[in-house]
Length: 89
Image (cartoon, rainbow, N blue to C red; front, side, top):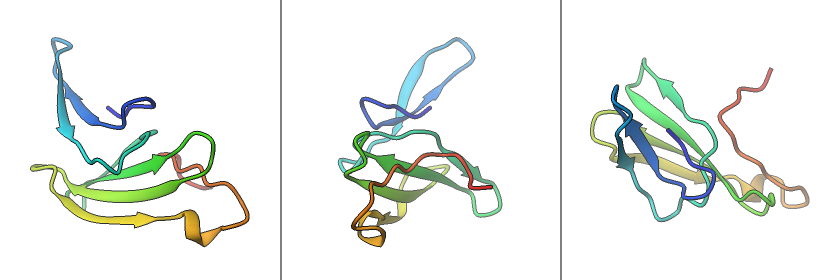
């Protein structure tokens, strides 16, 4: 489960109990996540809702340990960035 306001990735069990799973102080807002089953990782888009910041991170899906984190804002310095879990068509 991602979070627009907190930025923590959490797990929800069958009874509806929430537990934080991936907490990274670089997270501002996480909108959607993707499970990469082949590489056993969680892909996390990180964004600032005003478009002033965007990043993408990958975390081990068992431990939550970071694999990589890439800031995207420098790729389009004259345009806002909005990273989310939706794949481009």
